[in-house]
Image (cartoon, rainbow, N blue to C red; front, top):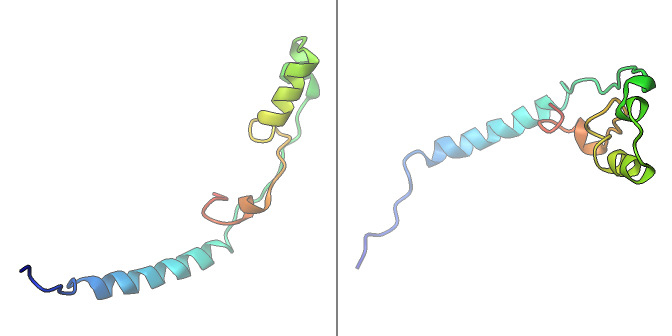
Length: 85
């Protein structure tokens, strides 16, 4: 038959390393960046510069503005590291 299963020599190192990752994850929670929206001039936005149809403007507001504008709504997971970085 085959050889019997033997433990991997570095298994203890892997187990100890995973514990370190837990401490790293917890430590990162205290170093999250600030979540601020910078002031902006509404006249310099796409809707301010061009004539955007209302349905397209609503599409942008729903699909793009949250990440690609200064109108970001910071959700709960943006405060959890490493996602928040």
